[in-house]
Amino acid sequence: MKSAVAMEATRRRAQHGANGKSSEEEGQPAQWGRAWEVDWFSLSSVIGLLCFAPFIVFYFVMACDQYQCSVSQPLIELYQGETTLLSIWSRAPSFTWSAAKIYAIWVSFQVFLYMCVPDITHKFIPGYVGGVQDGARTPAGLINKYEVNGLQCWLITHALWYANAQYFHWFSPTIIFDNWIPMMWCANILGYAVSTFAFTKAYLFPTCAEDCKFTGNIFYNYMMGIEFNPRIGKWFDFKLFFNGRPGIVAWTLINLSYMAKQQELYGHVTNSMILVNVLQAIYVLDFFWNEAWYLKTIDICHDHFGWYLGWGDCVWLPYLYTLQGLYLVYHPVQLSTVHALCVLSLGLVGYYIFRSTNHQKDLFRRTEGSCSIWGRKPTYIECSYSSSDGGVHRSKLMTSGFWGVARHLNYTGDLMGSLAYCAACGFGHILPYFYIVYMTILLVHRCVRDEHRCSSKYGKDWKRYTDAVPRRLIPGVF
Ligand code: NDP
Image (cartoon, rainbow, N blue to C red; front, side):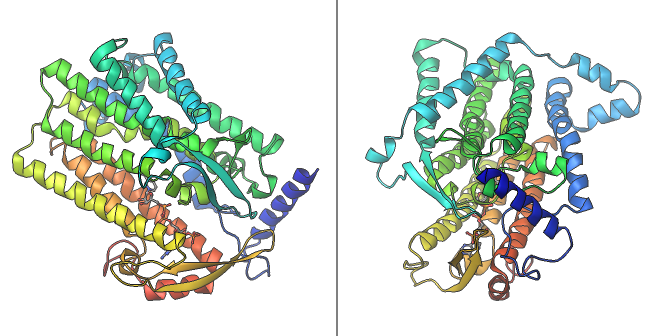
């Protein structure tokens, strides 16, 4: 009953928002989290993504499988009438039960590790924060608990992978490459099933009805999600599981499988493949090392769980974030030493900026400003905001360190790292550069989205911050 009342209240608030006035103008508590209202631009983007995103994944994977990673060749052949969409489709490897079995074992194993193996690594790895941790306060004022055991899951999975490759030989290390396209169908089935389940669950048995958001538009609700933190039982958190595993744990295994395939096909592994494996492994390990920090990022703190996260984590992330390694299986590029060193430097400097920026914010927030940033006590702007239960809370926006140089230098560092992965593939084809194009769109859009949200969360205080730090990503430029 309490849930039904709360859902009605959230629906009414959604209708309020639709009259065009901001919540502040209406004398309501400022809204934060994802949008309540859907404009035509957002709606058409959502419908476009729902229709085209699966096709984009299919297109890139097929370009590699059938056209040696040429993005333009299929289009030229289609244009000249030499092929049809139907013939590309009919040449695509189909669903196989053996791929379904591998995929089912993979996901079940990750569920098992996530749910049944509580973290012990934090007890013996100095400086690592794992085990039960608090998330950020939700708009309804809740603070969820999470079992942070991603690093442990990654270590166990990779130890088993290594043990298999070196000693047991239960399966070939090329297993992922060899089943890549048949497994794409399985990943799609899981992605759609999870998103549809989360959508239905939000109506029938939401985990926290007060944190649900209904916009009145079914497509938007399906894509951007209704429930904030859907869970099954006390601990199976959809966002933490699907965001982190199986997709990100798989990322490094997928790259290892590509490396094994290069070895099998050409008898050696190129320096470009090693660079892609190393740089992306640093990124993945960083993610799991900082999983407790990840609980305070936008994915967990603001995004609702819908198709965007559910399907995105199951399909988009493993298939498109790993395009460089896939490309290098078809084109084994050996870089000159200078080129390889430039790529390595770009990747490491990007990573340093990305990590240090995130670390500074985390340290600042954890210590409530009682810390040292670049050798000094940090400066900040005091802010206040309201949650939908009427509570008023205080927060701080730092204006020191990287956060005083630009408002999102962590994204800039991320983009530098992304460019390094692409540049590791040489300049023969544009396909490996898809990643930097995508990441630029993602992070610029994310930056704008985040600032819109912060502006409605903090109101005038956010304006004071943007006056103090006027640039978003590149000092003096943007
Ligand atoms: P941030 O970690 O930058 O978090 C933004 C939030 O930080 C804001 O909403 C606000 O939250 C708070 N904040 C903003 N300015 C300040 C400040 N000056 N001082 C203190 N707090 C501030 O963003 P994300 O969660 O998007 O990104 C986390 C990392 O993940 C980034 O490095 C990003 O590059 C990476 N990422 C990678 C992706 C990938 O696919 N590879 C995808 C998305 C992100 P509050 O409400 O708490 O004030």
